[in-house]
Image (tube, rainbow, N blue to C red; front, side, top):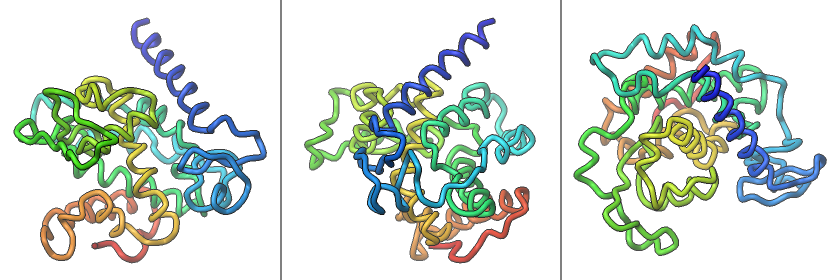
Length: 264
């Protein structure tokens, strides 16, 4: 019963977030990534987030992210007692993704599988196959950039990497919180203690910074640069190779060609 109540609560949260993400648009209008309604290419084109976006297909993300696929990620966890065990779940990922209807639904079926493979490749790399919730050693780094006055750091709070894609810096916490409807700028610890918020913040980051690059054909390498540019240009080749290896493995599992431009 407790599990059913939890899933019902998450479902209600997701529905409310989907409604907000659609900007209150009419059925004939698209919601741009900036939260405005319209029907032109600026709203319905590459960075369209909801509504009758151009290029959407009929792919259901849950049909691609099967139990077998998700459990295959969990099976690669190495350390015993992973804090992510029981925190990350397929159901929670699918609920968070449902808030962004264009995630994994733009272009061909193969395009959809590539985007899904890319997202989970980064997640697996960042979390040790969904083992870790917080950045290793992150507590010693506040990640507070005072130049972003729009997103002032809360007193005694730290903005180190948390969640599936390791949300980092006060400006990302601030923008993510505004988008997903939770004040994680004031309460950044929520990204490590509330599984739904944690996952949804990372899906937001992907849609904000990587989705447009990927669906416009920039390739997996461009998403590496968007997530951690410090690894690119030959600086951290082992880290880049790890991400690419995960991506190629997941593409192989989903029976899709990984495409060009794999490295940054």
